[in-house]
Structure formats: C-alpha cells, structure tokens
Length: 332
Ligand code: 8YV
Image 1: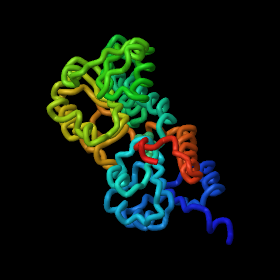
Image 2 (image 1 turned 120 degrees about the horizontal axis):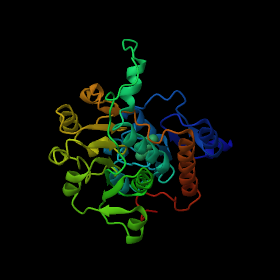
Image 3 (image 1 turned 90 degrees about the vertical axis):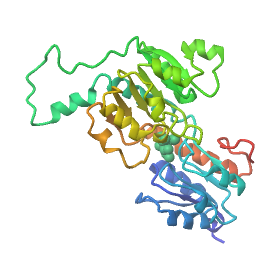
Image 4 (image 1 turned 135 degrees about the horizontal axis):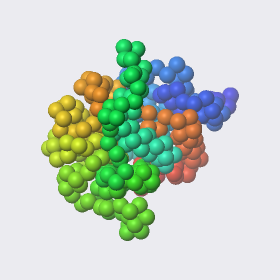
C-alpha cells in the first residue's frame, strides 16, 4: 500500500503559511485549501465525513449540525486559533471529539495591536493620515489648536479579562504611564498584581464608570456574550474610549455605535466585530473609530507559530499522547 493511503487525513479549511503546509504534507495526508476559498457549512459537513483531523479557523462555524454529521474517524478538531467560540464544544465533547487550540503564541502580537489602538484612537492617527491622503485637503501647515487628541499618560486603563493577553497589555500600558485596573472572573495573585501595579475591581460596573480607556481581552463564551451590554456601556464616561481585540460578541456593537454617534463615548479602536465580516456602517463612518479587519495576530511569525502548534497537537494526538493544548484538559 502506498504510504499516503495509511496516513491520517487532515483537512485544513484555509490557506496557511507555506512552511506550515509543507510540514503538514510531510507528516499527514493533508488536504489543503490552496486557493483559500472559505468553506460553506455544506463543505464543512463533507470535510468531517472524511477527515481524521479537522483544522478550522475563526471563519468556520463548527456547530452541532456539522459535528453531528462527523464520521467516527473524526477524533480531533485542531483549531488554528486561540478562541474556540467557532466550535460547539459541548457537542464535540459529547461525541468524544477532542478540541485543541493555539494559546500563547499570539499573546505578544495581540497585545501590541491592543496597545497600538490605545495610542492611535485618543491621538487621532487614522484621522491625521486620512486628512493628508485626501487630495481635496490642502494642508496649510501646523496649527496650535488643530488635530488635538487626548494624552494617555496618567490615565486609567480598565482591562476586562486579565489572562495572558490582558497581562501583556498591562505590561505595555504601564510603560506608557497608564494606571492599570482590571476585572476578571478570578482575582490575580498578589504577586502578579504587584508586579503589574494592577488594581482589581470585583464589580465591572464600578470599574467601567471610572475608566478613561477600556480594553476587552476576555474570550467570547456564553458568559461574556454582550458583557458590555447597552446598560453597561451607558456607565462609561463620555470622555472614555473602548478598545476591543478579543471578540466582537463581547460588546453590544449597535449600542456602542449609537453611543459614539451620540457623543456619549469618545471613540473606539476595534479589531473585531459582532457579525464579522460585516461591520456596523455607523462605526465605519465615524471619525472617532478605528476599525481593523481582525489583524491582532496577523504577523508572519505568529501565523507560523500557530501552525507549528497545530502540528504539535495533531502529531502528539496521533502518536497516542495527550496533545498539549486541549480545550477540555480532562479529555484524553
Ligand atoms: C486568529 C484570534 O487569527 O486566535 C484567535 O482567537 O482571534 C485570531 O487572532 C484567528 O482566530 C484564527 O482562527
């Protein structure tokens, strides 16, 4: 029998960096998506009928309808990404399908992007560059009261979700002179709090009412869906900014857009949206919002590291060991 016939079938839903695809081809019967056409739900159902391992991304909805069609040979869903809100984890667990993700390798890149937005929105970077690029404008030169933004040094940053990425944001923000505040399901150890000079708020409501900048860094789970609800967004100061590099679903996006338009929130830096790839037109139209197309982990290095993690998870699993990044650690 040719070697490829015995090799496990690994279906990868999107185009990955060449070096990752090459390695996958060496190790597995890798079915790649070289033209990067996003898969439909029907394509995903076909894939789970054939695959031993599925490698989806945030753009694939691996829901109950898909997982319930999986053939018994599908034993692992090795997500290319840290967030696993694209996967119905309960159905996967009930069907004995292991799910892994790629934590850790995109922490610094995502924190950099968060910090970039924390700087860019109050200092109006997008407006400045758009002004110069627009041929209809004739810049007459520097003026003392033009393009004024707000200082971030000394302001209060409230981080929602103080996991790896939240803490990496806190480290950067301290270097820029921001005061670090946070809300998290669990309070951090005293040692980490002291190290980050971070103040814990058990009450998210109370924290929101007192911050100058809010950064969303928690995962999207049923418990965090619309955590920043219409009611909570109204607690923010009119001078405050909201930055989100986590998941759009954590914020009531319509209400955020409405409050920015009404001047009840000063602006936002958003890398993620509630109904991606759709973006609320009010947000796109606003000068006070910087919108990015989900670029938080978009570095060549990061995407190669993510691919490497996916390969390690698949390989250890196929070799009969517990893959390192099990979403349900007890499952193996
Ligand atoms: C990834 C992300 O690029 O890993 C995550 O959770 O949000 C992104 O940075 C994307 O999810 C890949 O599937």
